[in-house]
Image (cartoon, rainbow, N blue to C red; front, side, top):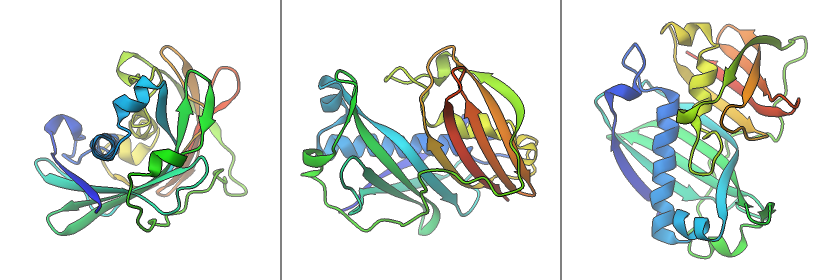
Length: 240
């Protein structure tokens, strides 16, 4: 059986138009996955006791309609039968009533902080019932269309509110951060309809990234660069 959890959207999770921000939807998904882990084991705390945690490598989210406040939104999540090796493929569907309003799929890795290495998912899947993947496109590397050059748009220094229990910037921070550099989203004339993010290298408290962007007409590409020159995240965002 797929696991489900419901949430009541809150006013502080909405933008100026009353639509729930994509970053908040990411947080709802994370909470659903947390409770799923509590059910099937090993739980988040079980893994933490072993010095391990699941880290998001790449994800794609498609939002089919504006989600507003107040609404009750129900999330389904499951591990897909594409899980193999070091990749944990987790899928989500979200419903308001009987309406499908969102789908998301993410590839997670199991990281051992004590030994500083990625582990195979292996035995951690023994309690899961696996279901078909959503088969959303999840390339290992984002391809910038030919003829489009990324240009520097600004920078972002990560602060107290951005950091999670693993000590790095939580993956849910990035949709809001990148929205600051999308003109139509920033002023409330459009919302994110699709977002693909490739998480390459984590950031921590007080680190600053430079934000590079190209695109337009509702299709935007991003790359954020750490002070050491490494890529932090790459993203493609479609707005409507």
